[in-house]
Each structure stands twice: as C-alpha cells, then as structure tokens.
Amino acid sequence: ASAQALAMLKESSTLHTLSLNLTFNQIGNTGAQALATLKDSTRLHTLNIILSSNQAGDANAQALAKLKDSIRLHTLSLELSTNQVGDAGAQALGTLKDSIGLHALSLALSHNQIGAAGAQALATLKDSIALHSLSLNLNYNQVGDAGAQFLASLKDSTTLGSLSLGLSHNQIRFPGAQALATLKDSTALHTLHLYLYCNQLGDAGAQALSMLNDSSTLHTFSLDLSSNQIGAAGAQALATLKDSTRLHTLDLHLNSNQ
Image 1 (cartoon, one colour):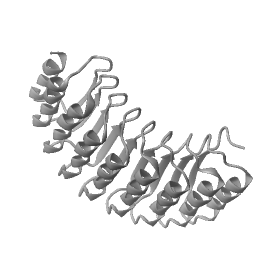
Image 2 (cartoon, helix red, strand yellow; image 1 turned 90 degrees about the horizontal axis):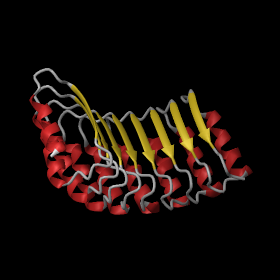
Image 3 (cartoon, one colour; image 1 turned 180 degrees about the vertical axis):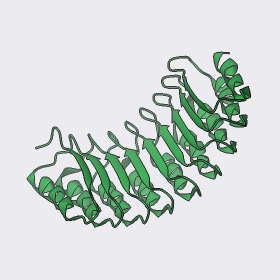
Image 4 (cartoon, helix red, strand yellow; image 1 turned 90 degrees about the vertical axis):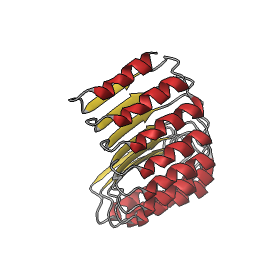
C-alpha cells in the first residue's frame, strides 16, 4: 500500500528529481509494479529507488525494468541488494538498454543469486544508444570467470565513458581478470572502477589487469584487489601502470595480501 501511494508522485507537475528509500518494507510485486508506473511522469528525469532487503525476487526486478519506457528519465538508480534476485531478474534489468533517453544507470545487486547468465544479460547494456555512465554492483553473487568474461564485452559500447563493476566475492580467477583487462580496448572508456576484493586472482590476475595501461582513453582508474593472494610479482606488474600515456588518477587497494 505504501509503494502504491508513493507512486502517485508521478502526477506532480513540477517534480523532476525523486529518491525513495523503502529498505526493509516487504515491498511485494504489486508495490514494485506501482513504482514502475513512475515511468509515466511527464517531468521526472532523475529517479533513485532503494528497495534493499525486501525479498523482492525476480518478479520485482522484472516489474522495475519497465522504467525503460519512460520518455523523460535520463538518470536511474535501483538498489535491489539482498533481495533474492537471480538470473531472470538480471535478464529483465538488462532490457533497460532499450531506453531511448537513459544516460546514467546504477544497479546495486549485491548479495543476490546472480550467475553467469545474469551477467551476460547485464552485459547487453553495451547496446544502449544513450548510456554513458554505468555502475553495476554485483558483489557477493556467483558471477565467476564466465560472468566476468561476459561483462568485459562492455568495452564494445561506443558511448560508455564511465564504468564501475563491483565483482567482489564472486569466485573470479585469472581467466576472469584476463577478460576484464580487455576493457583497455574500449574506444570511449575514460573512467573505470573495478572492485575485485576477495577473489582468487593471485599474481597472475594482477599481471593481467596491469595490461590496462595500454588503454588509449583511460585517464581515471580505481582497482581494489584486497584479499587476493597478491605478492611482490603482482605489485611489480601493477607498477607498470606508470607507463600509461593517458592515466592521471590511480587508486589501488591491495589490503590483506602478501
């Protein structure tokens, strides 16, 4: 009932920016469907919906994906952490690529049940014609190396300039790191944040990621490799980021390694 009532905010003739925090509220599918009708607002261009810990599941993610049909929305943030969202929900959210106006998208999906198939669906966001800023928080899921390989295809976007990938606690090893290093081949990416703490990357993974120094466009890079069994060889490889001809801002996290 609360979500349905709040959805009436779409009828405002002046409201263009809206943030709704409904954490721990047992918002069901009916509520999510109601919130999705915010797409019908004629004024709203910036929307932040926080539904953490609502046991929302795939059905709610599927309902909220209908926000893609908004003709005004250009900035969207959906917080669905700890909601039992699986691959089906991620696949629905991947259809946000079909929005004609969305240029900034943040999807917080940590502590869910998303695997490689869900990551593959989210990687199709690269096909958006308008998206230039994307944040995907997939910490504490089951993405694995296969999922990381799918997400690396975001490099093929011709519009995406800023990318943040949260892939901590996802059982990613060297093959996944090697795939993510191909983000260097993007022709548009200038800002990259990779959160990979508590995986099993080791020195080989760090060495692979150091290849991002070959990017011709990247000027801002943040890399969190905490708790990844990285030693001197990995640190030496990361030091070669100094050879980048474009990079001017670098943030490295190597806490709890060797």
